[in-house]
Length: 107
Image (cartoon, rainbow, N blue to C red; front, side):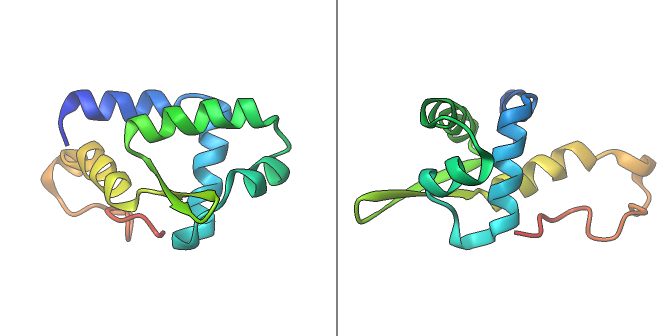
């Protein structure tokens, strides 16, 4: 992952609503969520959710796939893992990281 991509991903997560949406997508895993389900669960207007999903998708942390008449959003685990790998590349001064499983996303 390039530095400019890392900055874009971190900027996307640096908003409370986007972080909340991203966490919901990570928790639900590969089945993903539709905007309607997210809107109801997170109690936010459709336009607000749409704006924040667009920002997360532009950063590459979220993907959208059409399923019939709906979109299903999912956390992009490969991209999330790349971000974590970038951030931890030089942690612990080259020694093994003390946190078990810190190099992979659980989604």
